[in-house]
Structures are given as C-alpha cells and as structure tokens.
Image (cartoon, rainbow, N blue to C red; front, top):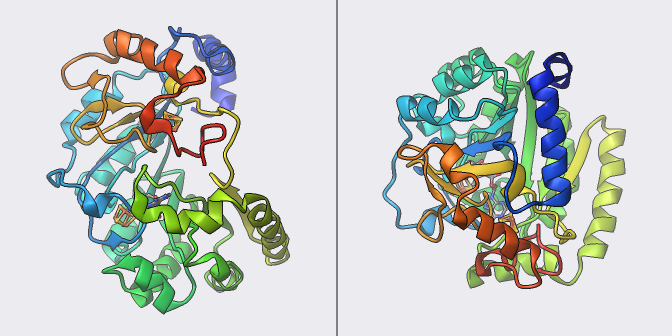
Length: 335
Ligand SMILES: C[S@@+](CC[C@H](N)C(=O)[O-])C[C@H]1O[C@@H](n2cnc3c(N)ncnc32)[C@H](O)[C@@H]1O
Ligand code: SF4
Ligand code: SF4
C-alpha cells in the first residue's frame, strides 16, 4: 500500500501512527500487527555460496505451498511491504509468481532477491508478468573468477546474460543489484559499477556480511565490519560519487553497527517456509533456534503479543541482549 492510498484510508493512517509509536517507544505489547513481512518461499537452493548459512543447514529442503502462503498473508490486513525471500532461491518454488501476484493484488509493495541463475526467458516473462515492485539480483563481483569462487556452482556468463535480458525487458519493475561485501570482493566495486553501466542497471546496494555467530565467516567480516568500518565507510562514500558519475545510485547497509536500531520485534516479522514466526531475517531466522509459534496453527493475533514476544522485546532493549543477537549489525557495539 503506498503512502497516497494510506492517506485516503483513515484506518491505515491510524496504523501508520501506531507503527511510528511502536518503533519509537518499543513497548512490550505492540498495539498493531506487523506491517513489514519477510516470507520464505523455499529453503531449497541451487548454489552453495561461501558466505551463506543455507548450504550448511541440515534442514530438509522444501517449498511453501501456495495455499499456506495465502493462509499466512491473509492474517496481516495491514501489511504494506513483503520480501519474498529467505534462506534459499525463490525461483525454485514453482508458485513464486502466483505468490507475488497475490501479494500485489493486496497492494503490498513486493520484492524478491534471486541469485539470477534461473532467470531464463520463461521465468523472466512470468516474473515480470507477476508485477513485483522490485527484483534484486545478487552479484558480488565483476570478475568471473572472483564471482564463481564466492558463488559455488554458479556460471558468471549465464548470470550476466540473464541480468542483461531482464534489464532489457523490465519496464515497470526496478532492477537492483545486491552485493554482499567480504574481504574477497571489496576491491571489485569499481569494476562492478562499470559492468552495471554496460548492463543499464541503475541501482546497487552493498550489504555488509553477518556471520550468524559462526566462526568460519569471521575472516570475511574482519576487514569489512570489525575494526575498520570508518575506513570502509569512507571508501564506500568515494564509490558512491563514482557511481553517481555513471548515473548509478549506490547505497550500503549493515556496514557499521547501528545504535540499537532493531525494529523487527515491533513492526516486522520473518515467516519460515513451514509457517514458524521467528524474530528476524538475520540471526533469528532459524526456527530450530527460536520461534514464537506457527501461523499455520495459531493466528498472528494470538502470537504477536504472547509471553515469548513480550519477553524478547524486554530482553532486546536491555543491556543484556539475547544470545542469538550478539554479532548482529543491528545491535549496538556488537561487531
Ligand atoms: C540468503 S540470499 C537468498 C536469495 C538468493 N538465493 C540469492 O542469493 O540472492 C539473500 C541475500 O543474502 C545475501 N547473503 C548471503 N549470505 C550472507 C551473509 N553471510 N551476510 C549477509 N548477506 C548474505 C546473499 O548474497 C543475497 O543477496
Ligand atoms: S544462492 Fe542465496 S541462498 Fe543459495 S547459498 Fe547462495 S546466498 Fe545462500
Ligand atoms: S538485533 Fe536480534 S532480533 Fe534484531 S535483527 Fe539482529 S539478530 Fe535479529
């Protein structure tokens, strides 16, 4: 629902006010249902990227059924944004286009993030016809060798060709590149910008890495997040200027730890492929670690302010945040 529509609808305007109140004051009981959703269409993947948790999970690969997706989305009458992506490749779910169309029919701003490998002619057509507001494609490097060494199982040529075809045909959908920054690809940014110019892509987001608390990614985090983020930030600002000169909008996120900026528990939620509602898409996305309940069994109205939610909200605001939040870039002094 865009802002124009919200202004016309007093109930929605009221919700916007409640949302602003909730993220500002972070009460234990939140007086409105979540407005920003992330729903995981699949936990199946066709790649095994070096920095990602998905390839080392031992959760059984599965897709969300369309009927379950509907059952879940229908519980959120005031949802205004939906990210249809989780720990897996969304284009592997054959119902992904139906899901996007259903979400858009409710006037929800909808996007997916894909690794781009499956963007063949057919999928491009189906995807664009389902009318998502944005399509993010993950591209972490401009050099074939670097790209393929990060994205195990990928083909650089195929992904570049697919991005080119998509960009040529996308008239009403914004195409954005998402690059996850590690020590392996930091020096790739200038080349990436030049590549994007040839592909006619106008926007790139550079995203800091998170480690899900795992030791094996600490080395990648070292340069990009840990000790040197003010230097990194300065370099990124320079790249921003270079991007501007090429008519590309460069933004970056999760580069430096913010000041207890986590709003997830107050206006957003992550919903797993099997219907569990978990704290967020970062460290809290694995239902085996923690979940507030299951939306296929219990309505969100009964879950959103349950004891577990109230307790985690209090915990997150305290000096002693939950263990799974440690190391999260949304948390003050955690990196
Ligand atoms: C988990 S993937 C799922 C979507 C799709 N499979 C893809 O790769 O685009 C979503 C985004 O998270 C990024 N990502 C993977 N591992 C990450 C990490 N450790 N820290 C931050 N972002 C990460 C990916 O590069 C991708 O842009
Ligand atoms: S393609 Fe996406 S979900 Fe799959 S391993 Fe890579 S980053 Fe993770
Ligand atoms: S602070 Fe905790 S709940 Fe918030 S995004 Fe980070 S891991 Fe998730």
